[in-house]
Image 1 (cartoon, rainbow, N blue to C red):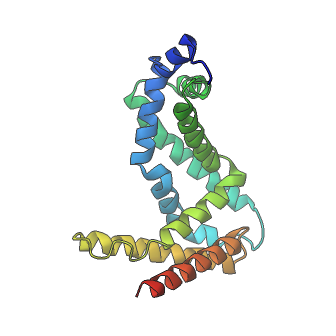
Image 2: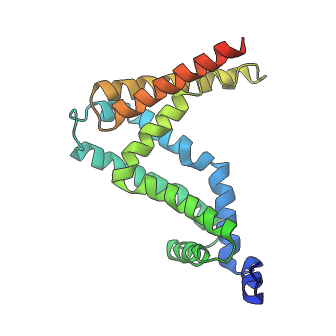
Image 3: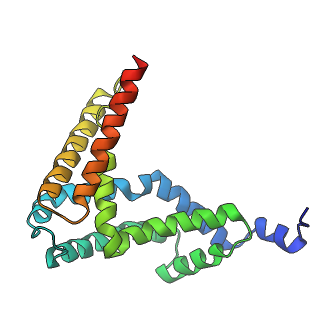
Length: 200
């Protein structure tokens, strides 16, 4: 049986400011639906630009859209940093410090948040992240049936329908990775239909 050293115990009871900041950011990250809503809203708002991208190409237009989204995300993150009185460099240093935490839960949380940020900020991963966000949104049609907030349900279903239509149009337009994502979405829908049939 491994011996837990005093040093390790102290790291689990980490009282450094970086620990608190990372925990606050993690809570804020989850409260904001892991940036899913921001990604979907951006894609839908820039529908025409996305559909104007030349088929099969990672074009200049896509790079420009990514720059615009990165700027909007930085502004969104800036609100959190301003609220807690820290700079971008201080925040980056806090993440780095907690990536080396003796608490595995803290390390894993920081890794998840960091990976999700990178998947949006890095262009190569941004396109796939956007497509997967649209697919996730599209799969939510009707999920909230029976809830009392009918008007909110309708808004959610409208967004889900718009996301599905955009995703299908992008697949037809041969945007890289779109066809694979829509194929996966259809496969998941078929499986849900099969499962639902088995419950009847």
